[in-house]
Amino acid sequence: MVCGAMAGYAQWGVSANMSVSTSNYAYTQGGQPAFNKDLPQGWAFDFTPRIGYAFGDLFSAGVDLGFGYANYNYTDGFYNPITEVWDQSEIFNQQLYSGMVGLFMRLQIQSWGRLSLHAELTAGYKKAYGTNTKTQYAEDVWGDYNKIVTSRDIQQDQFRLQVVPVFHYLLGNWKGGAGDKSHLSADLYLNFISLAYAHTVTNMYGEKSKTNSDPELHSQTVTNDFDLGFRVLGTNPIGIGFTYSF
Image 1 (cartoon, rainbow, N blue to C red):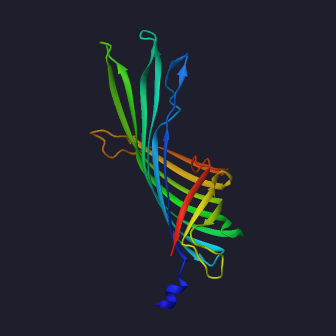
Image 2: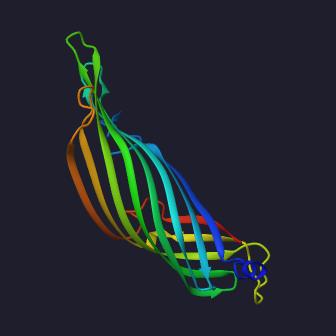
Image 3: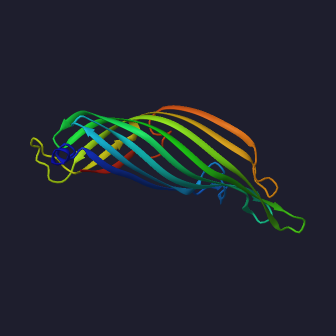
């Protein structure tokens, strides 16, 4: 038991990334506040824990898990010449709940004491379920606006690969001697110079109603993105994470 504990010292690591993002906009047309259906309003949350094992000082590998939620609105409208303001005509809402599982491998390229540069390869599969809801406003003969709401289920599958450079910095009491280890460390992910590939399949089903509880497939969209940068994986050019090793 003592030998096993010594061999495992500072080789297992647990870390987690958490992000919260919000989107909003101010849009004017003809000098008046208006609507732009191409711009989102909403927020998203992602939490990704990680368990890794260090095979010596140069190489480590492990498992990623992820959970996420996103809720965005896209609003359209028109200019009303009677009231001389822009009125809402349509709100498109998309909600997605997602789960992810993946593997990672990290190789140390260069070391400068506490600071080291690594190349990290990640491969992950993401599954998302959600709802697309369209709310339209129609004016009746009395001049009142009525809401017409239609809803469709959406299902998304994504496989992605990414290679990203990572700066790794040892925190705590580390002197650099033989066998000297630091339990706590920080990572700086340079996502803006990463190499990434993503294959995404999005299925949208027929409109849900009281008489149609199990709608058939309405449309399918397949995308393949190969990119140098962060566009297919998010909007954060730099990511920061902390790891505890034991």
